[in-house]
Image 1: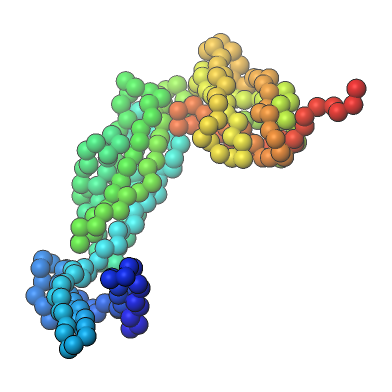
Image 2: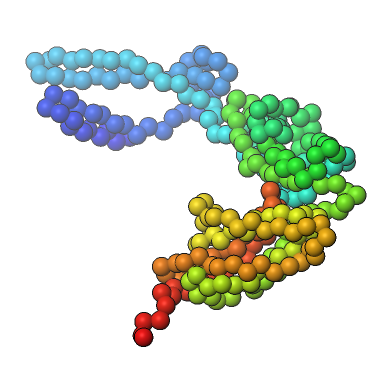
Length: 265
């Protein structure tokens, strides 16, 4: 190992040593608790006139500080689930030292329920609240107490007698070119829905996008055209049209060209 010395002031030095930790089983010291042992450290500094100073310290060597990985395999974010019927949630988890338990929450982490089967969880959406956004969170705890969290998944419940809700963007075509601030026709389809929001994500960035409310009555056609203006941009950019109702999303992307008008009279 190489000892690095750094002068921090006229009377102080900092010493740094790169050191490869031994395996836990090769450390003779007794365990502080399962999977943890102390590593003794001694620093001796020699001064002039045969003087020296010794400082003893220690740090804890842990068997494992890596969080386990956990993924919600199914359903996917934005999927629809029928009310009054069981919905299966399939979960994948892994850790080198083994998974101790897997937990799931349906109230955004406010309370967690341990699963008997770590790969599967079942719940029934409430029939009284169709079109409810349900967030599924999952976490895994390994044998050393490390916790890993899955990316949350949001699903939308629907009344199976009424049919599955959907949002669709039919026009413009992907890759179509328009000019800055140009008025365009956007063809949408709302299935078993009456309201949604249209966003223009400049550069594909959702944050900061303003929404355009879109609605229809129950007697109106599911498929209809909305005329609106594209954002004003200062350079050529890709804009993502995002139609969204709660967790339901549809996207199209277009190229918007910078155009500040006609220069000549």
